[in-house]
Every structure is written in structure tokens, then in C-alpha cells.
Amino acid sequence: MFCYQCQEAAKGTGCEIKGVCGKTSDVANLQDLLLYTAKGVAVLSQLADEKGIEQAKANKYIIDSMFITITNANFDRNKIAAKVNEGYAIQDEIKSQLGATAELHDCAVYRAANENEMESKALLIGILSIENEDIRSLKELLTYGLKGMAAYGEHAWNLGYENEEIYSFAKKALVATISEEISADELVGLVLECGKFGVDVMALLDKANTESFGNPEITSVNIGVKNNPAILISGHDLKDLEELLEQTQGTGVDVYTHSEMLPAHYYPKFKKYENFVGNYGSAWWKQTTEFESFNGPILFTTNCIVPPKASYKDRVYTTGASGFDGCVHFADRVDGKAKDFSAIIEHAKKCAAPTEIETGEIVGGFAHNQVLQLADKVVEAVKGGAIKKFVVMAGCDGRMNDRNYYTDFANELPQDTVILTAGCAKYRYNKLPLGDIGGIPRVLDAGQCNDSYSLAVTALKLKEVFELEDINDLPIVYNIAWYEQKAVIVLLALLHLGVKNINLGPTLPAFLSPNVAKILIETFGIGGISTVKEDIEKWIN
Ligand code: FSO
Ligand code: SF4
Image (tube, helix red, strand yellow):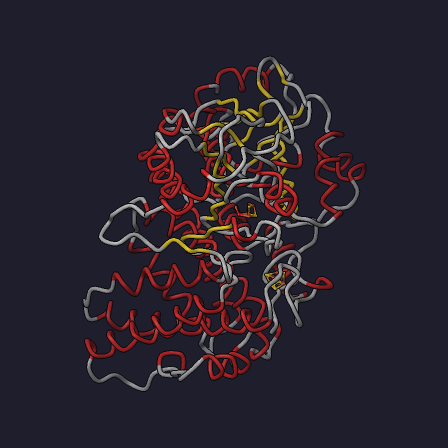
């Protein structure tokens, strides 16, 4: 195996024996082959598109497969191997529709007869098979942007929202990654274009979420517990949450959110469910202790899974793109019918209520619509000098100690600054007593990582209100923490919107070759982090 797609890549260069995330070498190899098979589907589907042949199945397959290979999403080798076989069937189906074609790339032709053959093949087509390190770096940067795009596209799809142009771009970009002739300049162009589709997919998901569940609004979320047995729902998929809430009505089972699902509480439609009682725990990486004390079953709707301990593994369920060997997986919807969550509900009824690990409330719900309603107040605070700077601290949290930097940074920021956050990075500071500025909380949580889109909409609105020419003239500093590939698409989207001087940490991606890193630094002013003291001095004071 070789994988360097996330911030925790071993030794800052790549995982070669086993993933720091827990991904075993066989699963990593099968994921490489799944991606390769999805590229074959993209090749054929592009040809079908040219002939006007309807390819809905291929589009969905591509986004599913890419989502499955995101860090921490799916560790189930059987599921991944089955997905490869599904890809072969889709490829065959398209071929029969296409009739004769010119010679096809190996990814659209190769067939593994069994899992052993899949693994052997994977060793030939992995990341390191691309020799030139800059081309490899750009192709992987593009691939990771696409993975993030696929994840958001899938959530939108689950709510019935699609954008054909996003699929077309995904196919074009995947096909580019198998080209041996493509130049570094052409790949840079595609990486930047990926940012445009990053904005589009986040806008699509924003529309899907807000039209389905209402506009997020300021909300206090309970972080204590009640006395009923309960289910903890993690990941990002709001459709799964809705169906779980519907099916738990009248059962005596409560539902709590975990990690990236916290922002679901901000949507008006979910407030009508009385058994939707609060958020339990913190960011994803603390799950190994928090799941023990939760006592009830846990439903993963997407990443971020930490390989479960034996003490609670029998309480872990997965659905959608997520999966873990030995855990019950809820199948996809058939013909639009709701998933059947009865097994997890019955399991919950036999469990003790969660053990309380903290009490109180956290406040969030500052997505674009809500912030725009406060615009007058915000503008007045900026003009009057009460707010000197906004600091975008969105992105991800992670388990390494160097992430304490972000808690310290939030604590050390001067009182006249406001943190704009989204994604699980928020857990580094959303429980700190940072106070407010004239009633505006100093931490404004827009929502999940995809709601970074909201932060961009807010910034564009402020630019308009302050009559500025350039988004970079706003008093906004970007100190973004990244972990997995959704952060890559968020970053590319911000670059597309013209945002410069983004600071990315705790370390720059291992997949950036020195030359590619240089392009990003010179063109967009991307930087890293140093110490809290130095950075506050440099960016804020
Ligand atoms: Fe994982 Fe966090 Fe939302 Fe990231 S829980 S790490 S960019 O925010 O994606 O899934
Ligand atoms: Fe390593 Fe991250 Fe890849 Fe997991 S996803 S194998 S931790 S680089």
C-alpha cells in the first residue's frame, strides 16, 4: 500500500505498512483498484455522454466509489471488492450500449477474477506508479478534490438534488488522471477548475439542505443527557438523520448527534422531533472513549470512523459510503423508500441511557442566511471598531497533539476578534468561554465542513456592504485546519473565489511536491503555521 491523502500520513510522507487511520494494506489496495475501476466507468460514460446515451447509474457509481475511498469512511474489504465488481458490470453494460469503440484504456478493460487478483493488480496501478513527482502530486491533488466533491454531491443526491455539469467535470478530471501525456500546466488548470465545481457542489448541497430542512438559525444545543436509551448518529448525511428520527418516534429511544452531525440541530425541521435531544461528545477522534460511555448503538452515515474497540464494536452500525468489517450495514434506499433502521432501534431499547460526560449548551447556526439577518449589527461593530478582525478557523480536527495549537490560538486571540468556523475543527474552541461582542458570539459556527460555503457567502456579502473591490481587502484572516479530502475541495473552492493568503495546518499536505507547493505559495500566498504567539503577531496585531 501507499497512501498520503490525509494530514496524518505516516512520518509526514505516506502510510506504507498500515494507515495511521487504521486502514489495513489490503483495504488500501482494494481502494486503489476501486478508484481505477471508477476511472474506467468514467472513460466509458464519457463516450456514452457523447452519443447521448443516458448514464445515471454510472454517475452515481462514480460518486459512491470516490466517497468510499475518503479517509476514515470505509474499512470493509468485502464491500469494496463488491463495489469493484459492480463497476465491472456497469462498464460491461455501457460497452454493450456503445457497440464498437476505439482501443480503451486498461482501467476500462481490466477484470480481476477474484480478490487476490484485485490486490495484485492494485500494486501495479497505485499512486507510486506515476513516476514524475510533480505530475503525481497534481493528479493526486485533483483526485482528492474530486473525492471531496463526490461526498458533497452524494449528500445532495440523497435529497434529490443533482447537477449534471458536476458529473461531467468529475468524469473529465478522472480521465485526465489516467493520461500519460497530460502536462503539469493542464493539470494545474483542472485543479483550479475543480475549485469552481467545489463552489457549485457546496451551493447545490446548501440548496438541498435548506430547501429540505429550512435555513439554519441560532440554536443552543444541549450537551448533557436524558434518561432514555438512545442512538448516536455520526457523519454528515441529513437524509439518514431524518429517516432515523421519523422511525424512532414513539419508541422511547432518543437520538443524539455526534461530531459533524451537530449542525443538524440548527435546522428548523429537525426541531419538531422531541426525542432529538442533544449532541454527545466532541470531534471524531475522541470516539474511542465517548462511544464506550454512550452505552447505546452508534450509526455512521459517512466518515469519520476510528476502528472500533471490542468493548463497543457490536454497537456500531454503518450506512451509505461508510463501512466496517463485522459491523451491521444498512442498505441503500430502493425506489426512494426509506432505509429500514428497525435493527438499531431495537438494539437501543436494550441498552442503558448514555452516561453524562458534560453538561451545558453550545451555540451555533450561523450559516449565511442567519448571519445576513445580523448584518447590520456586524457592520456596526466593525465600523465602530468593536470587531477588528474575523478569523476563519474552519476545517477539521484530528488526534495529534500539534492540534492544541488551534485551541491555544483561539484562547489567545484578542477580544475584538470573531472566529468563523465550520467542520469539526470547531470542537477545539466551541466549548471555550470566549464571550461575545455586543451580543455577537466570538465563535460563529456555520455548520458542517461543506457549510464553509456559508462562510464564503458571508465574506462576499461583507465585501459588498463595505464596497470593497477585492475579497482580500476584508478584515478576514484564514487559519484553516485540514485532515481529509473534503478540506481539499473546500480549499480549492476558496481559491476559486479569489481568497488569498490562506494559512493551512497543522502541516502542509504530504501529497504536494516541492514544485507544486511552490506554485500554491507563489500564486495564492498559501502558508503554514508557526507558533501561536508569532502567528497572532503576524496576522492579527
Ligand atoms: Fe471528518 Fe471533520 Fe466533515 Fe472534515 S468530521 S474531518 S473536512 O470536518 O469533513 O468529516
Ligand atoms: Fe495514512 Fe491518511 Fe491514507 Fe489513512 S488516509 S492510510 S492515515 S494517509
